[in-house]
Length: 99
Image (cartoon, rainbow, N blue to C red; front, side, top):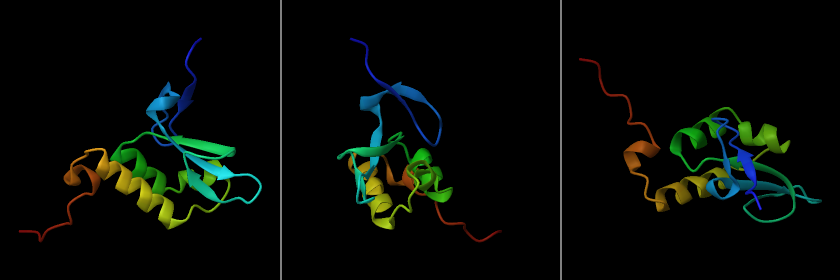
């Protein structure tokens, strides 16, 4: 049996379902959860750039047709840190003074 393929909502990369994070708008109460429940789903690469773009451009909200709470983004950032991504790759350094 062939694996199920999904597409990242940020970078549009296609790959096996297991390579992505699943964010779900649960039916019928319209709450947003990570990786569990039945309802409308959106998939996201476990990379800092994809998560940053999804948050900045509200791509998760548009894909799920609901406002995504800030708590969901915070949980995704924590998952990214736990996966071993260096902190410098997660957030860009603050701008320094111009010399």
